[in-house]
Length: 345
Ligand SMILES: Cc1cc2nc3c(=O)[nH]c(=O)nc-3n(C[C@H](O)[C@H](O)[C@H](O)COP(=O)(O)OP(=O)(O)OC[C@H]3O[C@@H](n4cnc5c(N)ncnc54)[C@H](O)[C@@H]3O)c2cc1C
Image (cartoon, rainbow, N blue to C red):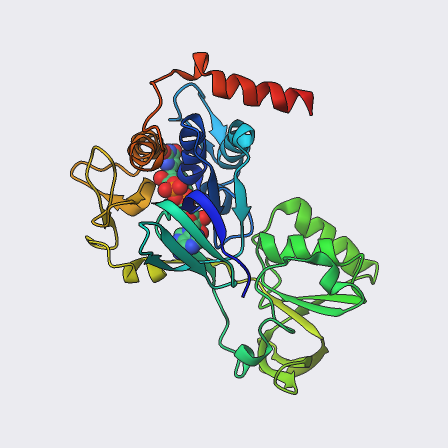
């Protein structure tokens, strides 16, 4: 077993609120590791509305979901957060020395003096198709996200779906795959028009296949895929050779393991106080959309406020010298030093 990562604080969730918590902790001299099920930062802003403008972030009259995430990532860069993507926190176990051990479904574990749960509505997970036997192929021939593009080099890749992820990855893997086939149930796509045009151009030039139908059967030895049978709208069937299958059917949000962490809950939210945003377990705080307290508003700005107070409470508990003298960011010597260090890089 690999050694656990050691951290002052582990933040569960790299949505906007989890990201800003890195800043608030950093200002108090605390280091954070950030874990998210997704393969990128941004939570709902990046996954659900990257191009929609948000109008109620103070000081930013209009910023897109992705623009806000990019700004937050830039803002927390001086504090060097360590990100661990594509893994879901499964357990939080109190240790005898007062710390917490967190484990994820990808293997790593983390020891932390305090935990911030910024898990939004729960973890984003791919919608999985129900093709018989698909579980056995997962991780070898079937993937719900592309973590390492190189893995698909020289492969016969079958991508299923009609949205942005399906089209983006069809275009992205086409240059390195032996062959890319895009399969969708009908000849109408929900993806960005330029992606659809790019796909149609490759199909017209014979460099990509487009198949209209729905998979009924997977072929292979149960772990390694060789192809699929699919059915057209008129119920005729056809075969597609494939050694990699990427179904992109969108994401669902699952409350998931949060329910098993022994915390007081109220209708799929974690109950916290309004001073420290601490849960029923001292040392574990919950901020952003996941928490509940009287008057809670699910707004990004509420989550930002909560992160500042949770960070203060954590510093008071775990920093050897307690909370440092209150400083504005304009006069924080720690922040100035870190920004100068970044400039020198
Ligand atoms: C279409 C739309 C428009 C919106 N417009 C606005 C607006 O104009 N203004 C506004 O203030 N708000 C708006 N919101 C709401 C806003 O996006 C949310 O309030 C905000 O995203 C909450 O941030 P968060 O960091 O708490 O959670 P999220 O953004 O939900 O991020 C939580 C993250 O935690 C991860 N996670 C959960 N469980 C685990 C686990 N066990 N292990 C690892 N990772 C986990 C998830 O994968 C996710 O990435 C909008 C929402 C939507 C859907």
